Length: 134
Image (cartoon, rainbow, N blue to C red; front, side, top):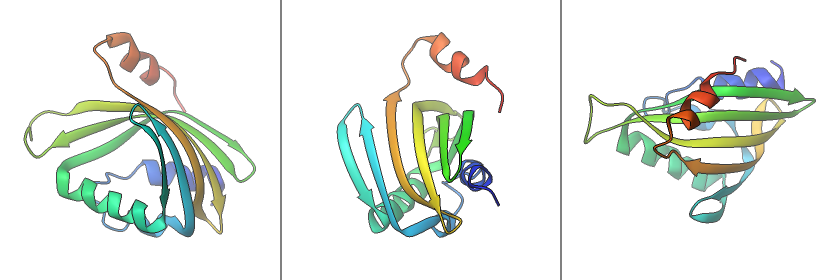
């Protein structure tokens, strides 16, 4: 599998239903995440804990990719996360927009630099991300 295929396979998962997603993460993984809440750095164990929390908090947690660009073992992904919470099981909502840059090593997600922004009420924000096809 190419680096792009590995990243695309990860983003095709529904993280609320997939308990083996951590198998796609390299044990030495470090995620550098800048969000509206500030900067967070997560290691493999913290990512594993976050994936467990997603499975406990959501009925679905899906990605809709808008961009997927490969340069050697580095892949940049643009996407929006859509969730269905336990509290509102009949409603799927867009949660946040992300741009992530992944380094792939030994066919696993190794290092990540990402930035995210919560979805707002502007309908163009969601539709503009979904206009581009991979």
